[in-house]
Image 1 (cartoon, helix red, strand yellow):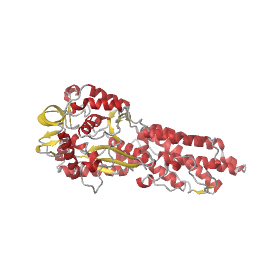
Image 2: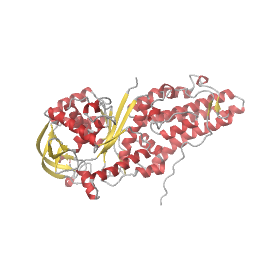
Image 3: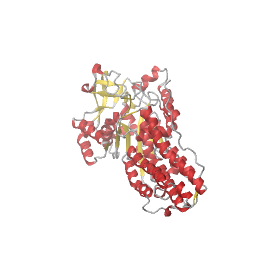
Image 4: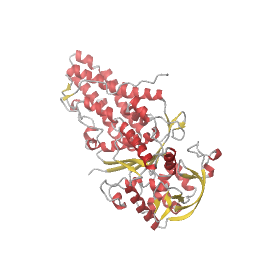
Length: 525
């Protein structure tokens, strides 16, 4: 029976069109989902949009649009970008969905029944961009937000509904201690532990004088605070399309979520507030919350409010989706911050995908065409167990799986590319062109088989990151596998495709052609 694996990106706030930071999280989530499909797991990848709150209302008013029209337009751009990046999500959750309101109200009633919601007064400095009250000690000069550094916070003094977060301090500390992998990476875990040790305070879950959002049940003067609404979008997404929107139906099949993938700026909401809310409602907690680092440009975090974003559509148009996916997951250690530099981008992608991987396939298929009429009349049994490529390829099964499980994409790429580089060295050392002239046909076939099987194996393990290139490699090898179709990818047998020796005897190949063309830098003018 296949395992299930449910994962989420954040539900992106739709005050503006997506930038590369949003794409980064979703590329990573798609790679994880693709890896689990390759392992035969039933996968549910959730992404979506957080569409309520004051920031959305103000942005829509500024643009002269009703809030819903604004949200619809921006959501369309997110969905266009995911398609351009070859991202295959299973559910797109929108917090303006009427079915979502039913889930939010049902959850609110559960928490209310526990005595964890009360009316109080909220005074403090509020960042509209974060939709969060800030402690004064955390503010920058001139009362500016430490995250949205070019925006001043606003003073608020209003009656709100509150959630009793303080009641769950001990329960959260116990959960962190008993489940050390709940928050990852280690730096994020330490950050949360430090925050919780300072003492948890109850937090506001409603706003007054705000029309764009769901009203608090039984009190229409109050609108539910965006985080209490948005986090439950993960639960709404679990509903089958034709299911009645009840909490029990939503939780019946995929809960608890296996992985929440987020940027580190929203870690506190997912690793402290969200689990406390779930404990109050009597629900199991997600398995893991992973807070990755920021993408930076010129040393600064990319953000819409700072105006220093990379246009991901332009990046894909210039370089292609596989190049973008590969660079950000291979070159930046997942969990750490990483800086984008175009020269480095082009050099890394060309070296790995065009020169190492693409060139190895092209030159080997060219020899297969010349020496074997594009057919290798042998099977894997012709490769001795001590063949260096075979030994290295077989070792990938566990090492690459381990790296993907740990979200260590850069490590996985390094191991896979090491096999590709070994294939290039093996060809040079064994010189099948010389052996062919000397009449050593059987040895030529053994050499070419080992190299082509190495390329195939590399394509299989790289497919979560570069599905288009992997698909083209399989096609040129005459193999049938659709890495872009979740249903088909989920049916691939990891015990054959992911192990050495899948290439069958008498396999007919295609004429060699480039699977990835070298990128070029933009001209100075």
